[in-house]
Image (cartoon, rainbow, N blue to C red; front, top):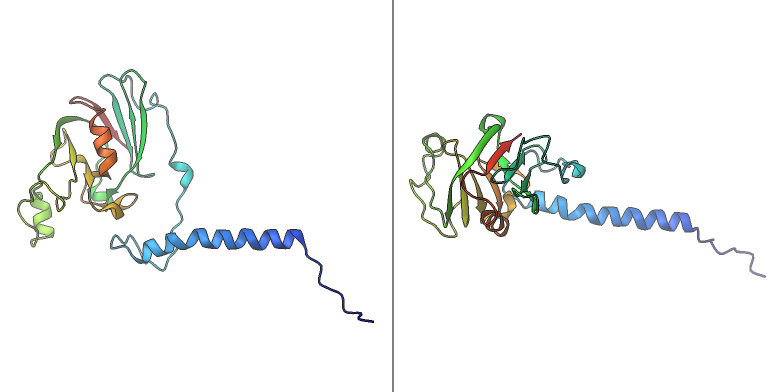
Length: 201
């Protein structure tokens, strides 16, 4: 009597809809993070696509002739820090913050010359010119931009250090240094020593 046919459920259509909804929900936190962040690299209405595959493990041989005293490679493009211990028993890969601009970015070979737990911080003369309102000195503590640990490099004013502002990691957000989460710089601090070689690319 009733000639109205019930719509047929199409498995492929349902699967496509589910995948589309999942992809949309995955994209939402990224957009929310950009909108709520003070570390803006560009117009926040623009969707930023990054090549996740560039954040991957690497071999040390293309970058170092040996692992004497361990080795750190900082890739400023993928915003990643790689560490290899001298006996190759330890390999670590950490996300980092990198300098805001190309002219603040230094590349090449250096080494760790000093290690400080609970560092204090003083802005460089160039920073004071750009930001005259900054204090001349900040003691160790939660307001210190160097976080809980700092590795001083042979290049003057350059460090690998922690940060209390976790929004900076993975972004162009520093004045020249390389930043890590405090838990990760603490771990790295325990693995390196004075003389550990460092290469920034």
